[in-house]
Image (cartoon, rainbow, N blue to C red; front, side, top):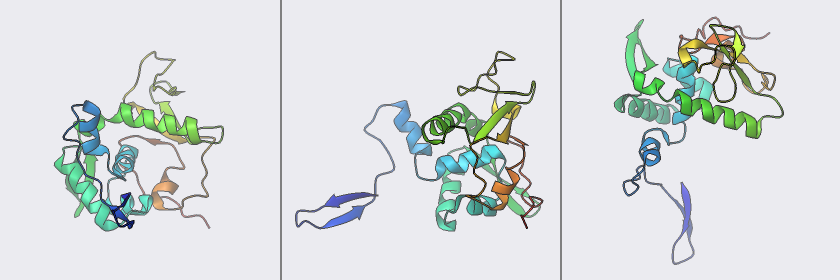
Length: 191
């Protein structure tokens, strides 16, 4: 939403458009797919292994209506697929969705560098060799850039566990391999 002032001086809110039809640019096309509020956080959680609607909703503090709309759009755009497991829908990244990993990782790193109080919130460990990848995603030990399926997420020295206590946050307090379904049922609730 943006604020606008009409010719009477009334300041109100008006909805922003959802496309950039007059922009001939790959970034504009990408933003049409992933640029709405919450969308990148939903994709981040999908990389973490979050698959169930309730887990997305609890971890993101997002309204069910907005989450439903964003998940439906991500499915329609081919970034997620909706699969039935155990009588419930689960949302899983497609190859197209997984191809967003370099951009998402770059944004996470930029955010940590610019906003973390001196230390990263998460560490990304290359499972093949146990080495933390650098801010560009490069493994100096193996001399390559592993994909998300080859990474394990660990809490970093800048992690603040006091901010969130939902099942996803509790599960992510221990190392977890990306893209593997996150078990939020056994994430211990503190006493």
